[in-house]
Image (cartoon, rainbow, N blue to C red; front, top):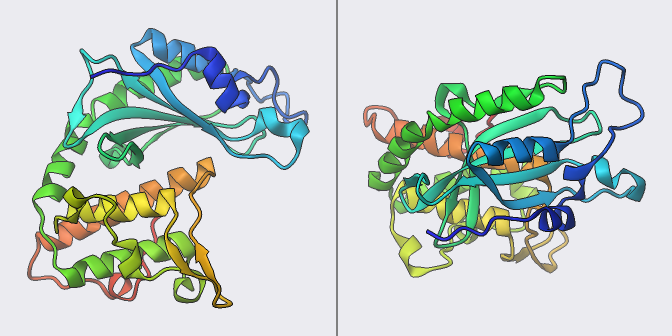
Length: 284
């Protein structure tokens, strides 16, 4: 499978904070600054190559090099692990303004829609590395731990693919997803309905499985572009998510929601919890 590895010039154009040479001036002496590009280079040496990058927009131009940023890595084709209709990735996030430590997650990239996900790695969750002298070594160790969880993620995807859900259950899933995106008052804050969120962008995604339902909802939330109504009644389109922190938060929460649905579907004696039925599912 061909892979487009980003050059340093491409990384800089997309996310210049990767190449920051110093942190925020307000950090303490205990803050161990390591440029993100050092970590990128180390992961590439270990066989993980940068394939996509993004950076949260900063209103303060002088702090553009401090903004939160994300780089997604993929192994070379000979080692690349497929998970259902997706390939596995590592997702690295960081900032240099004290707002976040280095974080490493497992990710999936769905080939049919060119859409990236973030998946909590079972009990391991994700790797968080505080800024310090041993950042590079700790992240390399973390990448090995996460790679060991890919098989578990693959098992989860297989379960989601084989789990069929009814229209009513898909509706409950979409309600809960809107609460994750817009909060407790989603019914007044969301410009779209659960039915709109369930729209398929391609015929093969109309299958009534939990996996395809999750993919429809996740893609529609992340990419936006759905026609809806604002709180004042005006016609509007939902916005794509460009914030790195919101991208990771919402992806993790949607995966947790899908996992909870899967567990409930395989315990037929139990009914859907009231918080999911009412569209009030909240993930940490």
